[in-house]
Amino acid sequence: MGIEGATDWRAEAASALNWWRDAGVDVLVEDDPRDWTARPAPTAQPDAPVRVAPAGPEPEAPLPATIEAFLDWRYGAGAPEATMGEPIVAAEGDADAPLMVITDLPEFDGGAPALLDGAAGRLFDRILIAIGQSRESIYLVPLCAARPITGQVPRDLEDKLAEVLRHHVSLVAPPRLLLLGQATSRALLGTDAAAEAEGLTAFNYSGGKSEVVAIRHPRFLLRRPAAKADAWKDLQLLIEGQSL
View 1: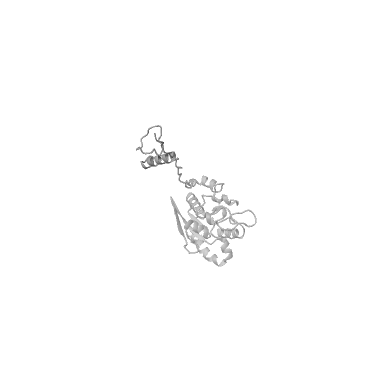
View 2 (view 1 turned 90 degrees about the vertical axis):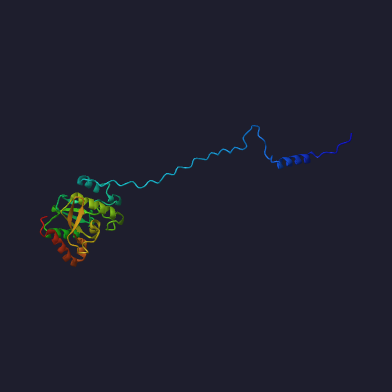
C-alpha cells in the first residue's frame, strides 16, 4: 500500500465552501421548513400621530337683545373696555328720551371721570339750553365708556365699540341723534359728518331709523370758537319743525 500524501484540510474546506457559494447556497439552513417564494410579511409600523386641526376662535356671543340686559352687560365686567383697567362710566338719563346724545369719551377734569364734565360740560349745557333741552330730557351715551390715558378711543376697540353703539341705538330707537365729535360720527355713520357739513342725515337700523345731526365736540369748539357758528346751524336742524 502506498502512503497517501499529506492533505491540507483547510484548503479542502475552503474549496467546498467556494463550491456551495458558487451554487447559490450562501445562508444557513433553518431547521423548520418554510416557503422561500412567499413574500415577506410587512413589518408593523408604529401608529402615525393623529393630526388635529387647530381650533378656530370661539364665536362671540350675540349682543343682548333687550335694553335692560344690554345695559347690564354694557357697563359691567363683560364690556369691551373692562380690560383697560379704567373706571367705566355709564350712560345718563332716560333711554326713552326722544333725543339721544353720543359723546366719544368721559371727561377727566381732576376728579372721577364723568360724561361731559368741566369746561366742555359747561359748553354742552349751554348748547342744550339753546335747543330747548337739558340733561334731564336727553339720553347721554359714551362711545367708549372708559377714558384711557391717551384721551382717545383705543384703535384696537374701534370696530367693536362701533358695533356696540349701533346695537345700542337700535334698541333705544330714538327719533333724533346728536353726535359729538369725529369719533362718534365715524363709529355710527362711517364718515366725519360734521366736517363734511352733511347736515341732517338718517341712520337706518332693523325696525326703524333715526335722524342724525353731527357737530364738533365741545372740546374742539372751545379750542376753535369760530367753529361754533357752523355747529349752531346744524343744531337748528334738531329743533326746526320738530317737537322733541
